[in-house]
Image (tube, rainbow, N blue to C red; front, side, top):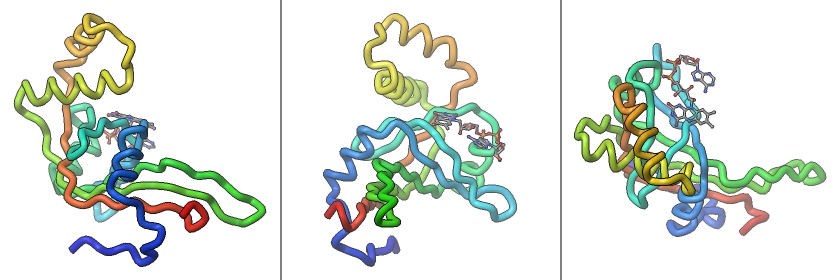
Length: 159
Ligand SMILES: Cc1cc2nc3c(=O)[nH]c(=O)nc-3n(C[C@H](O)[C@H](O)[C@H](O)COP(=O)(O)OP(=O)(O)OC[C@H]3O[C@@H](n4cnc5c(N)ncnc54)[C@H](O)[C@@H]3O)c2cc1C
């Protein structure tokens, strides 16, 4: 059911898609929003190689959308190098499609937030990290997106 890329030469190999997801610092999570309007919301994330983890408040448009429909896509732009003289951009991006669930299990939730914390504050001490997690624990909601389809594409000029 997932589509093939029409311009196959521009398609990125799985390892390149992984590289982009590992090094990216944010992406846009596209959800089934209110009244038929897609809700595309920017968000930080951590990639495990199979799954994406996000942190969120327990209420809001994003959570309502996930509860309405667990299917989502997540886009990370790796590069957008504008080439004015060519009227184009030398882009590179990935899109992951998958299903989101809210992590209810405490151990799963803790693993996910710890990995997210390590990604964004790799030099912090374990003690500081644990303290920060404890402080945010109550209102914290962790989301897991199981990736079902991953595609990556780059500008023809980068091929
Ligand atoms: C680079 C980046 C990283 C971020 N990382 C995280 C993260 O890891 N976790 C997290 O929870 N949030 C993150 N945010 C904030 C995130 O985009 C949302 O604002 C936040 O998650 C609240 O979403 P909500 O649907 O619950 O908000 P609600 O307040 O329920 O949204 C209500 C309405 O506010 C508007 N709105 C909400 N967010 C935005 C926005 N970012 N820009 C413009 N309009 C908006 C929309 O119209 C939406 O319908 C990040 C934002 C950026 C730009």
